[in-house]
Amino acid sequence: MVPRFHRLSSAIAEGIRLMSDSERVVPDSGFRMAAVCGKSLSAACLGQFDGNTERLLRDGVDLVGSLRVLYPALATPVVHGCSRWRPSEGQTLEDNIVHLEDCHGFSRDQIVAWLRERGY
Image 1 (cartoon, one colour):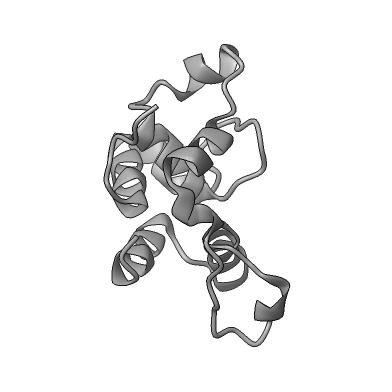
Image 2 (cartoon, rainbow, N blue to C red):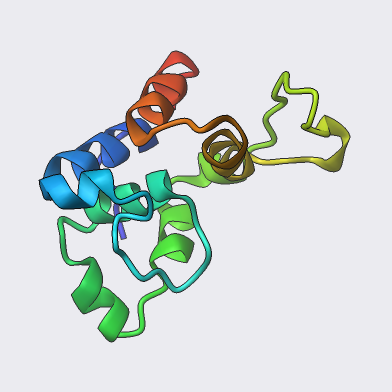
């Protein structure tokens, strides 16, 4: 399997572009994922798999697991400067994305900007 985009931020941005207007407003984007993931990673799945997420899920594909293989940076330890964050616990880029969404209310677009600032 080959990543469709060079950067994770581009996969998320494409997923946002592919979403209908109503999906952009709904916080969870309406996707059923095989694993718990944030709204930005749901968008990354949509962008990476070119809108075929529902079919792939029916076929038993672990989309988030596939993202982790395609974008190994998701497993990279990243220190975040948040007082609620505990860098000593070894949080990954994936953990950071979910943290920024859940604790700081980042939108998908803000996650894309945050990732691009860091070269992801």
